[in-house]
Length: 180
Image 1 (tube, rainbow, N blue to C red):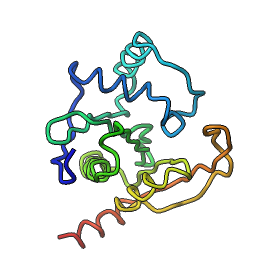
Image 2 (cartoon, helix red, strand yellow):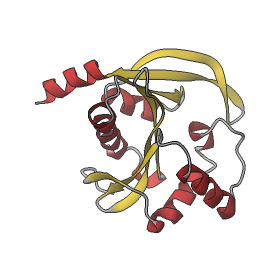
Image 3 (tube, rainbow, N blue to C red):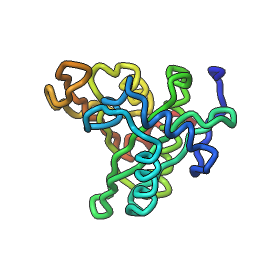
């Protein structure tokens, strides 16, 4: 992937299933993506999970991330609270797309969707403390550290802090105005 890849968000298609399965079953980054114990995932289990997600609440939105027309990951808005107007965001990229600004751009597009299209006033996320690259990317997108859950996650043989980050629409709007 070139460093200046054109990044777009789109709906999932059947052509994305191999990439999505590879991403979902990647054991190396399991703890960064899931609170459950790492385990090999079968294709049948993956497809059953996809079917279940398709039937889940409209409060959850997942986009496929394309970089120069190639599917390289997903970015999601989920657990939206319609009354308090907040939701959680998450992102996952295939290994070859990491560290190239693709995730930062995809998150930027998801934030616009969340604040402008969904009228949220706040978005938040959680990251494993050792995932410094992800935390830097989230900070570039405007997220600030709101707290830590000490030794909250079991990651590759040791306990790690979970970093809680958030972004208010008013902060996002200020950043958008500064960029113009």
